[in-house]
Length: 272
Image 1 (spheres, rainbow, N blue to C red):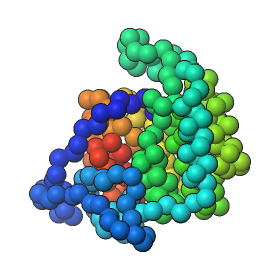
Image 2: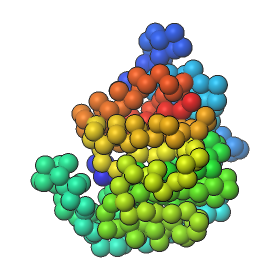
Image 3: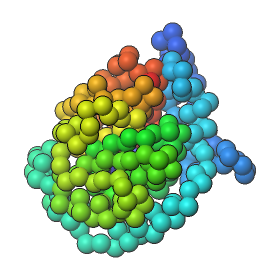
Image 4: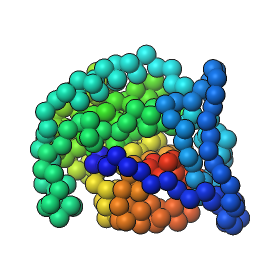
């Protein structure tokens, strides 16, 4: 959710299946038309681990550089512009506490919302995962939530997005435009399971709330036991701070996930 405009780029090393470091440049950009047409940007991908039966390097690269074909995407762009014109909203006190109380006390959508290029990546990954149950930590103003809701709708699924700040109502209005049955809940993500049935299985999770190690790792821990066999977890702003970098390094060491990669040093991706 809360993020600066600058991004750190990951190193150009890839771990092969044996765990050795293999130097390899991983810049990919699809040119021309067809299904492999690039989205808005060239993405720098760093593969930490590629031992998944579902996700190979080539499948992942094709996925994030795909050209999304969904009639709801123009509506997301229209709503994004509308949100950008809205006045600043008060941050929840817990967000301020994480910054030592010295950070901003209010935010605007155009500052904290996921940029269009990353929103499309989120949509493409969730769609290609054929996710039926999606959860999100940190709805913000509902921009990233709309991309997830579009993916949920295309797969006949549902999104449960959680936001503790007062602008959860704004996010709810955003999501209802895209997938009316999806929900934005004004509550802490750590209690997401209380809103699900006991036999639910989460196919896709997006962690994008507080960008400190405690919050990121707790969100990941709480997802354990609820993930389906095809689940993917995406973490935003893994290079936001030393704390978030530490959290991502720790998540990558979780051998339960056969696939681990990062996109532009910003999105961290784990998958079975």
